[in-house]
Length: 137
Ligand code: DAT
Ligand code: MG
Image (cartoon, rainbow, N blue to C red; front, side):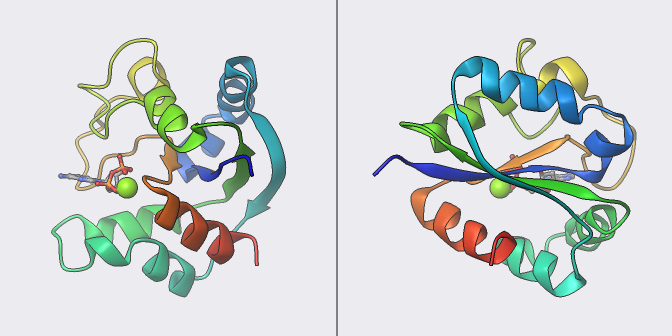
């Protein structure tokens, strides 16, 4: 079975009208869009999504940021897509993300308590299965 990952275009990406640009990069790489929805998630969905970060200093700002506007959730498929999308996204801190990546080309530090870095991508097969269930159930 072909691997699948969860990609989220976070509220900053949607608000900055970068949805098309980000989808273009995923498609240009050769991955397939299997399902896509515009969502305004409940706090409980975000608490589950980011459970691993509970208690960290950026956790509350992160949840508030993710509640600040609509999110585009995408089910993306392709061989090694989990790893491949993380490469397309670039590293977490947009200042350090390599040029050529989504975060490196389109993101920057805005001096906030949480990094606004445009996209989320699952980081392992276990996370992908859990997150796809959470966002597409
Ligand atoms: P990633 O989204 O690259 O998987 P993560 O899962 O470690 O990164 O963190 C989730 C999000 O939280 C990340 O996209 C941006 C924010 N974040 C992470 N570490 C941070 C930090 N040290 N300061 C501010 N925001 C941070
Ligand atoms: Mg993560």
